[in-house]
Length: 252
Length: 310
Image (tube, rainbow over all chains, first blue to last red; front, side, top):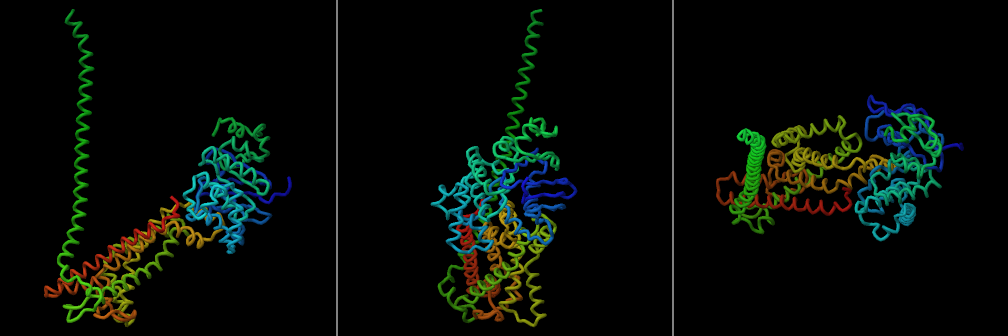
């Protein structure tokens, strides 16, 4: 494989006494969609959130191991956490717009990272709303509250907002699970388009979704990575029994 | 044989009947008691609503009735003359607004960082916020005369006179727990995902607090501030020893100040009917200020809720 800029080495995560990730080592291929699949509670969201160190905000967690972006360890003590997060755009399970206008939602990230120029911000907002295929729907009401958008539009707005910080990696935590089928399709189509330029890591519990859009699959069970490989391989010829059982719906 | 048959035929039928009847009666009975329950509670609720509303109306009525003769434009535009028999209570109105406003500003300067710390910088339900909530509840329960006495001790230790500044400090202590707890409740309601969304963009805690959480909670924060202001402006005991009392409008933090509650207190304490009447007029003015504040707080809350995410 070509050298990947996102690598995970011996990552362990504990919530209090409970170990949520057990010695996870992974290479995430560049400019591809990697789907993390597995039964609920298997640690897939934890793995995703450990990638941008978002775990630290909400719970008492302990993390050991390394997450390397371009060879730089995100968990090294000298690493600035805000820089880490700037490299990753996150799409959460339920779209969470910020309490401001549509425009300001997209401009928020560039703003905090130092972009003050109005016309540049205008260009950024338009560019990423277009990429998220939301521009035509909101161009006339950029100043109205983001919370007034439909939930499908909100998720695409979150995508535009995440892209506006110019990340290298897009993280999606079941990004379509709260959406209706049509909106899901929209988001999937946008992700397929984006993988030309970004490395995408997607947690999903929908196997068919993984099949539709993933190039690479990581199967997790009880906090461990059981199997990884090309999507076709893992789905057609799973090497482990437990992967096959999960694929066949014996366990879920 | 016949009778037996009839018996046989009748027995199960009767038992079914009686069974039905029994359960039917039981159901009816149960619905009856439940209906009664419902009726009693409804009556109680209506009764207490009436008591609350009429208490307010009676208070307003008495104040207005007793103070009506003394209410005039002069009351709010002039300083008192000849021992509060003539002139107005401009000194107390301005004093109250300054004490209330100053104390609210001071309390806000202390509570905003505190609630941000409790809700954004550390986990909301971790030890520090829980301890702080408990401390604030204790402070809330401290009678305002204690804050007055405390302010008085501080004041005399530093050789200050009773003054506007001392009153502001005492009242701000009184307002602090009210403001902090009200703001804290609002911030705890803000979805944690909003914070995460901001952090995931690479925002710092400061940016998350002031650019995102502040916007989300602004309507509630405005209400909290104005609620604390309403309490502060109306409090008597905290300013009793600390404000001093003066017939002139305070011009600096170190000059003594009158406040409306004190004006009411002192005027009611005189044996003269006409001065007592003026006390009610002062009470009416105070009540109207508080009323205006709560109306303004509603308007502000509505005006700032445009972008709030629900």
